[in-house]
Image 1 (cartoon, rainbow, N blue to C red):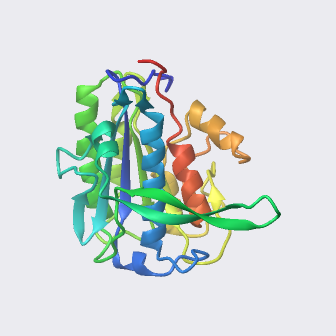
Image 2 (image 1 turned 60 degrees about the vertical axis):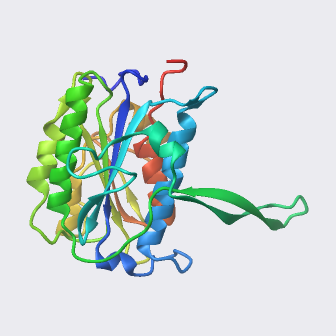
Length: 280
């Protein structure tokens, strides 16, 4: 199981995001410049989607190198990006890229050439809006994710193994999701088992912990649960994390704890850094 399958239009990759949309996501994000946790996560997911669209863009348009989906869980569970629960969660990237919900004008600080910065307007496509209400039905979200991934594997049995990334700020309200997580991780293409990664959003100003290899140093049972539900980083993603300056140990897992806004962006970037085969 090499995690080395080439990504092409006939053999695409799968990216599925599980986003906590519970009421606590309306709390201010630590160091989030006044934004809520939900808003910071939405911005990070939208930037990631834009990057995936750009990775898939060629002279003839956006090629379907990826199937991508979002499951939000809070006041129930629901699909984003134009998908539907339970069997049409994953959407071809061309359909996503061509139909954002809207395009906003935002400001970006750039150097002015004289030692200062100036604001420059930029276009910011929005595919996924922030939301925060209800409880944290993580078990139900994992069950829906398992069905979506299983359907993808049936259609593309030789694909690069699907990537499932769960972003949450709190404890599940509907039981222990570990069994549903195991079911996801047991699913496999001919190239390897499904990869399940988890990120815990910080509620306190403490340093983020990236890609631990053991739960022994983790401070609470929920952090340990997320560690147990996270897959080991395969070689390509291990290399990506090392390139970002992380000191990884053997058996490092795809979990980030106490994430600040920067950690969320880096987690999504590293966790999805797989590249389509050029020209195919």
